[in-house]
Length: 493
Ligand SMILES: Cc1cc2nc3c(=O)[nH]c(=O)nc-3n(C[C@H](O)[C@H](O)[C@H](O)COP(=O)(O)O)c2cc1C
Image (cartoon, rainbow, N blue to C red):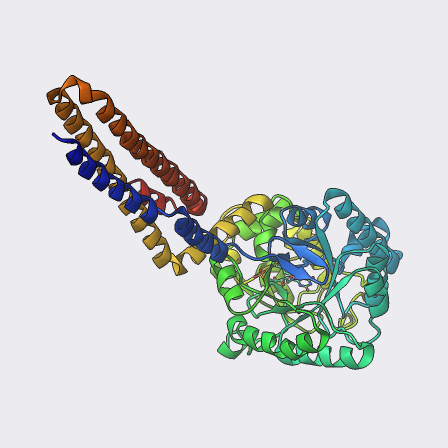
């Protein structure tokens, strides 16, 4: 074989290598992987100056269900933990002697405990309907919580906006309609020349007291998915006028990571979840309360007519049936804690009933719950719940980008095939060379061998480049496919 034949041979080898390097272009692949990753990661939730990397607000659960333990665990896992103020005084021994101060002391203690347990975001939920709403708000300000959520009534009059602002406390009203949101924002603009930092929209599948009439609960036009976009819309002019974004956080029936994806796609910036947080190790309720969630069947969940004049969702039990039949356990109203409570006509005190349930005395009270409670199968840690939600979110996000991902896998497979071809080609050339070399006169060996070595080293360089590219691609894919074992299998194949 003559030298010029080797020239042609090496030239074609070089063309193959160039082709390969070009088609393997790592930039193309990493761009695609980055795109895929970006669209799958949930965005942090910003309320005022507070940024939660997990866009989940743990809904406040009154009468001792969400206190410092649950709230700090959620905050430690990147979400917003919330301590509920209502009924918290029942934690104190002197509740019946001095209901007001018992509540304020217990509230202060729980906020302080939570602060010791986390550096994350701690909010409080103060119902506007509470008799001590303003005093509770005062404690929240003194203790410099991060966010105050205010529901069960419209937080419009006498809100100490200036003091809240001075203490870097964000404000988020909880509403059940776009009308209520609009009214709050309009009135705040007039009264305070300011607007709240976020809005929580609670749909009809939520737990506890509901902001809907019984007739509205099942109607399509009152469902979360239906109302949410209109709330996002109502806030737009206020966002523009105040030059700030006002996130909507939607809740009520959000159970899985895929639900979160759906709700965020509808325009929410975060979700509020409560039911799922009850069945966690860290929830502040007694284990019997949590077990009632795990053991509950769909048909056990029903509505109650609460003594405070709103419907509520609960696990129905003998206590509820007895009270509907007129049975009236002996109770003493400590201090008419809720402005709207018709204590004199009530068959029982709802705070006491809920407190009994919190303590695990389920025969002398009942368990508030959300519509999805029957789907809960076990008690888990807050960390594993949030991880499950995140993975569920990623898998859902994956579905929408499957096409892109499949392209990526196809491309990687193609490149791998070409790489293997190149190895074969170079092996063939090596044999050709050895064969030709043996036939040539000894004198021309050196020049030819040098030329061969140069060409071979370029092939080896190309091979190394390919190995590096393929392994980089593999690492990128491994990141993306952590939650996608099927995709990984496809790639390995
Ligand atoms: C046991 C329980 C107690 C609750 N207590 C309160 C409360 O005191 N104040 C309030 O604003 N919302 C309360 N809620 C509503 C939650 O904060 C939350 O918005 C709602 O339950 C979200 O729906 P989900 O439970 O389906 O996740 C309660 C919910 C549950 C399950």
